[in-house]
Length: 261
Ligand code: R5P
Image 1 (cartoon, protein in one colour):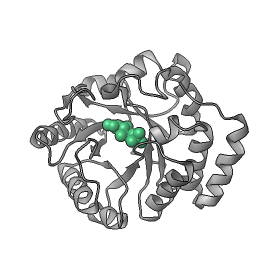
Image 2 (cartoon, rainbow, N blue to C red):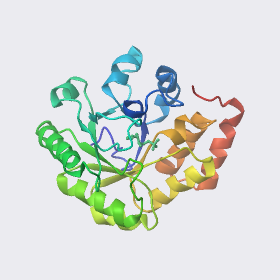
Image 3 (cartoon, helix red, strand yellow):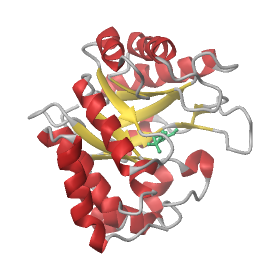
Image 4 (cartoon, rainbow, N blue to C red):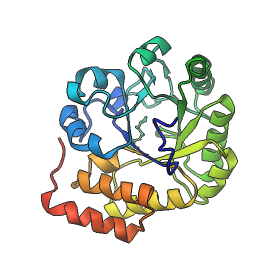
């Protein structure tokens, strides 16, 4: 856990670039090597797939940052229902790749609810034998309501299954969700790319509500100013900056900003 969440401040900036496992070459991740080279230095941990580690993280970067290894899949955005996932990586493979943690999606309330919860529990049973924490990803999908009632329900199910970290979306009264799963660590997903002020406000609100950090993807790698965005996020997560102070950091990087492919 200390490789993932900084033990000094109990916070983490996790950078999510696992999207191609079901979205293909999405904007910002078409050139994975470039995205990784550009942004890896500013994150604490990178959430990605074994294919990305094997084929895109340049040799000199391997081992630079802890990997949160995605280990479920089996679907694509071409299907209406994304919930039909199974385990895609064995525990032996995760150990061989020196994964700091393993990420498993659950789809509570979906047609495949039981299967995805069993994916989570099966991996927890195996990973705990080797001291590898499992992160549960909740509520990715087109049909999920993202309100407190749903997200707290999904998050608490993940905690009770034995997840060490819960990744969920931000919602109104988010501190009640954090309380409902305390002391399990909660990280917030970014969702669709939005404006820098809105995105940074969500980071700020999440930290204020008790999240240990964020696991953001599109709001970083699809932004016009990706380095400015991740630096601004870091300042809120690790230095308790206000949104205004973080925006100053974002704006200071704007003159040299360039979009990712
Ligand atoms: C989706 O299944 C993936 O786990 C993404 O990493 C997750 O949704 C977070 O990325 P974003 O901040 O782009 O929503």
